[in-house]
Image (tube, rainbow over all chains, first blue to last red; front, side, top):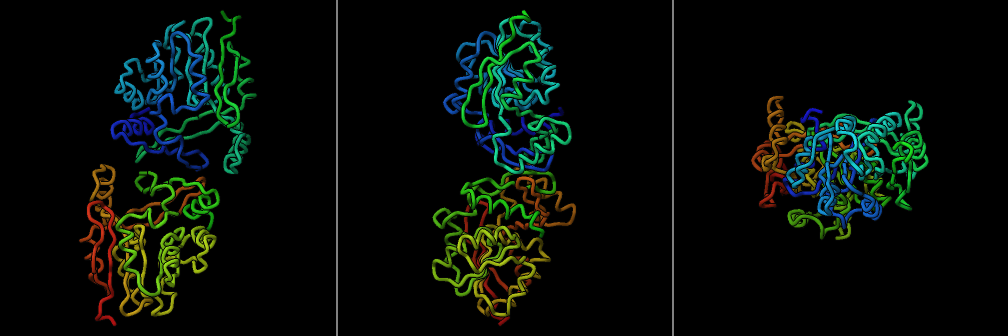
Length: 247
Length: 247
């Protein structure tokens, strides 16, 4: 990604420098546009996280890799708790913000290159904040889950947040699911980009799945769903453990 | 304007029906995108208006025409004060919201068609909320000021809000001014459109001017600046009175 297209990172940097919370603008490839996560969410403290995220982060053990770290809110919390944390993001701006916030161990690296880490480097993979979505599509998800198996310890765990896309009343979202079915994509496979000022981010796929869909994706890999956290709303977090057989 | 392109009106309707304040997304023709006015501003009550708007609205007299009425915040206030108010907007959605809020005298009509009203129909023209911008460009502004002279009484008054575009530190705004100068437009002549969900509004010109620029535009018409309200910030309101010589 060219820095000039790093709309996401530029916004995080601008927010960090101005100490102002601004809403993120997300554009979908059906022209749908909306403000994304709440202003300031990327800089939120533990007390402001959802109950599901607070419960989920307690499942972290050992050496942690935070994938799609953003402004580092989860990594900073875990490091403060004494964990050995490495944070990666494909956004140079996001990683710059992490370092400015004191997270020296933040690296510009897309999830696709996660296998550049040595085997058995991590015990926990953290993908909170809907970052199961970074798997992009089910085929890529399986490929990346295998890469994650290689860089983790035998009893490793993935903590991954996502959103059940079917828990919506929005006609525009339901019609987008239909569009995706027609073009052979998963209904919750969102092609989107971030806009910030004049900076237009690259298009990328971000995958939202129901619990059943996640079960199916994970079932064909070296990993198994151990638990789902989050009750009523569309957002939930999966605790995904490495299968003993792959040891 | 086709209703399907009425992004502005659809957002006002959605806000009205859901009772939820959402931020407006504005796109400029240099790709700059931002959330516009504060969420809920269009439905704000008198107490929430800026001091300049509160002072300016006190200049209203007689029969009022509210141009670009939006969700009707200014019209509803003045009607409650006993004024005879007509409200127009080129957005069918905005006018629908006005009627749902009890403003029966709201009409879908673009400012360009303001001369469809009979001569001497109004004593006050209200263009608050930056609606001096609806003049679009200086040539059109002079044409519309003549149309407004025809539909108003001899001692009529225009109350028009705008923003001094030069009161900014934003590189992206300053570079946009330069772009406009190069293509022969006024620096503050913003070509913009509203985006809401999948609805992409039509491009239109919205004119921001300094006090000096407004003086120059108005000086060649049947009107004269009587006063400027608003001190420090970029936003201000002009009180513009009809010249006695045109009676």
